[in-house]
Amino acid sequence: MKITSISRKLLSKVLSVYFILTISITGVQIIAEYFNTKSHINSELLTLQKTISGSLTRAVWELNTQQAIDISEGLIAIPMIQGITVTDEENNVITQLGSVLSNTPEGESSEYYIISSLSEGLFGHSFPLIFEFSGRTTTVGTVTLLSSNDVIFDRIEVGIYFLIGNAIIKTAFLVLLFSLAFTKLLTEPLQLLTNKIKQLDLHDPDASKFYRITNETNELNILEDAYNDLIDELIEFKDKLALSQRETNLANDKLDEQNLSLEQEVARKTSTLSSTLLRMETQQKEMLIQQHQLEAKNSRSSKTESTLMTTNKELKNSILELNKAQERLLEAEKMSSLGKISAEISHEVNTPIGISITAISYLSDILNKLQQDINEQKTSKRTMDNFIENAQHSVTLLFNNLARSAELITSFKQVAVDQTNDKMRLVTVEKYLDEIIQSLHPKLKRTNHRVKVVCDPHIEIYTHPGAIAQIIINLIINSITHAFHNMSHGEIAIKVTAEQQRLIITYQDNGSGIDENQLSQLFTPFYTTNADKGGTGLGTHIIQNLVLDTLNGSIDAYSNPGEGLSYRMTFPDMRYT
Image 1 (cartoon, rainbow, N blue to C red):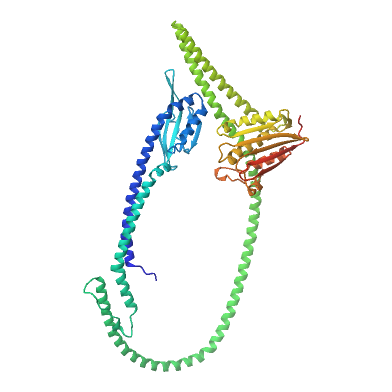
Image 2 (cartoon, rainbow, N blue to C red):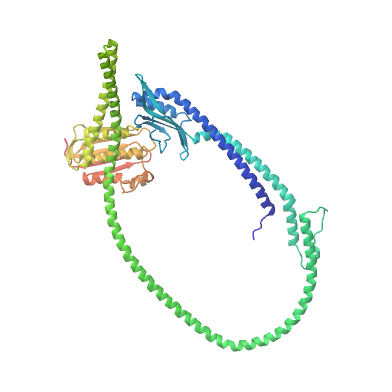
């Protein structure tokens, strides 16, 4: 049986109250230090906002994305800044570095607001970028500056260690002091009493009595007196027990003689009957065991047969449904890249169109002002010069942004038509690859990755252009998503050559690469290393189907960890010039 120490139990209760009080006070001090530091960081963020607001507003108004990115990179280098997001007037992201809130407040781009996300450990401020032009103010975008709890903890780390260390030292001293006191005053006297009781000799109880060394009276001395009284009663009881034992022994001797004769008679009469009953019971048990075994065997056979028939039927239905689901999933995956590009193209076109609308509105205002000055005969050479300068600036903005929109739509149009139409046509390979990469421009421009195409401009093939577009788009998206996951400047090289009536396309990136095990399963359907982020594992499987089935070609992949991933695709019997 487990022994519970009284002194240890008392010590644990006393120290538990002290531990709770110490932890509570230390926790309150840490929380107060946290909120005080967080308030200082918020004040520093507001001061920083006043410093960078002017230059960042000018960069966004003039569509100088590179300058906005440079300013953002300078800010993110400050240890206090954990994240920065710059958006234009339509809340489109211009640059986004560091930490990002998963749920960004909407509808507040034109006013200042405070950000605080307990779940993500981020806080900060978001404020509008207001540009003053010709006496008018225009909100051209927003800037969000984020810091995190990690910054707070870095600043208060030493203070926290000091508070915790102080609490630990005081607690350790108190534990030592109480342990010594309880051991001296309670544990050792109780241990001495326990040893004395264990050494009790029942043959000589009087020798096991306690004898006081001091005249001090406490609870332990009272317990010693009670023990000595118990020894006296035990001696008296022992004498009475010895007398009763002698009388009992005499009576037992007579009873034993009578029981012996009776037992001998009963044993003779029951011996024969017991042997007969034993044989009958043994035979009955064996028959019952055999019957139960036969019944259990028949029941298992019936259940197994029924289960096999039901399972076989369900398995056939599952295979049919799985084949149908796989066909639908493959078709949906083929069109998913086109849907993503369509969404990004629409967002990309919105920016130049919005700038064009602003320029037209401004041009209309200065035309009305000029018309009013002419009607009032207030025109002058300076007025006309200002009008011409502003009008030319507005027309230049209109021309550049509308031309940019037309170029994006033209590049995307042909690629989209080819992917939704399975007809074959004559394709100039270099030009068509440029159109595919141009349609991916909205996705590539948010990164620093580059795509380089090396192709003879005279190569033409009669093929399925939609399959070619699907292959190149999936390869580039795979490189951006997987190969360049931890890289800021990735490079993709696409080389096209014609050799002995065969068209050879070599695709290579300088990303993280994959190991031999991953390379062996690269084209396996539903195999993905990105399942937690929505990956389906069908991208490379669709590429293989397009190369082998649609284009009647072959594809091989080569890679080593840290050395990028490359594909070699060969298309035989292609008619080219």
